[in-house]
Image (cartoon, rainbow, N blue to C red; front, side, top):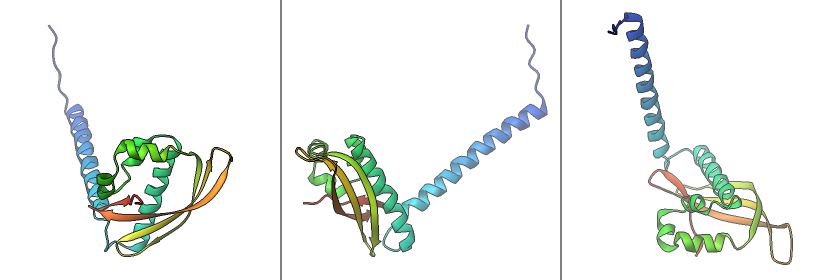
Length: 148
């Protein structure tokens, strides 16, 4: 027969681990809530930072041919006008090699993001082109507006 032994030290250690996990969940929830409040009244520096990160992540996904992830960066209204298949068809027309962030300027409700895009076309390799994107804030998050 096996005997169970309980010690206060072991029980306290377990309680500390559980408390630590609870604290981590609370901290993550607070951080998520802070991110969710991004909008027109947010400081301009915060808007520029968030839009810069999201715009670069979107281009990283496109360059990596992860069109499903890149599609998620489109605004909800943009996703209502272009399907994932339609987005992939357009985004995969060129072989994108690089996207260098050049500038981000934000107004109250929108941001303009400028990239230097490098891609291969049918008859030319390593074409460089400036591209300006529009980003908006919707539901506390920044999204790219699909050009019509």
